[in-house]
Length: 429
Image (cartoon, rainbow, N blue to C red; front, side, top):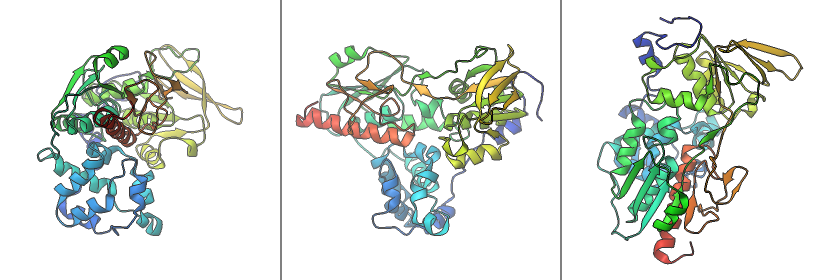
């Protein structure tokens, strides 16, 4: 039962509604379903799905391993390239990556279910012992700033090589975007934390939370430093009334939901979300699932320019989110908030009732002691080297980041390989 009172309130739904709304978006395949899905793969030579994967997972090989009844081997194939393959199976936009490149998609409009098969394999792999051991100790110590996907992937690969790693994370929990920034229905049952615990079980990695040490001090103390801090600040709107009660960052809204039970999260009756990326879609859908009566996702450009994939846009629409495009916010009325007005290309204006407004208009790099930056990002080479000696970076904080977990993992992994080469082979760092 929904309670459609105006204002921002928690407990708008009955407990069974919350359970249903925030259940797993894509339930796992059972063994028979996995075998049927795997049987559709052509096991292509020079498979386009591999080229489309930022971590270059050997997709035909791991699907063949599932088809032959060896999901543990399939998991190892995935983890060799992407140690966070379990999370990526849940949150990657496979519809625009590996599955879009699938030859079945080109021929039939129905690709092999690569993401679901990857989850099938990684869930089984994570249920067993850790697939990798550590090399002999090297005596080298590396500091990693940020316990998000890039930092975790870098730390794990370095630990495999026998190095000791200390991860410094400013938040209370490791995981970064996976822990704090992804819709709760995509990673239910505490999966993000379980994956981190599993990753850390390789040993050799210390995590210090609530901690943001000075970069110069780390560079002096450690043999190398990796920056995987993500984007710590958020963009705002320069509008009168933007400080009204009821206006907040969508990032904070999502993080609060990820760290609490849905029944405890207050949501408005009429919610407006401003933005066109994944954060905007996740915030809008979850506002609806929390019991908001009306949710409008407003984007200043055309629908085809939205950064959220068409699949995610359609998901939002299917949950009852109204998508308003070519609409630029120009006025915020009331304190507490009562409505938001948007300008349209025609010159007309439309006013949308709102008691809650969530801003999802991008994040920015936090200022501080940083290597060279350009366009608000740390400048890095293909292997993650920055302008500072002994310092690498990867993920969203860099000019090569793509706001994708899988891309951050690839960059953290590749930086670790370059750090290892520098430390053990005398390469110039």
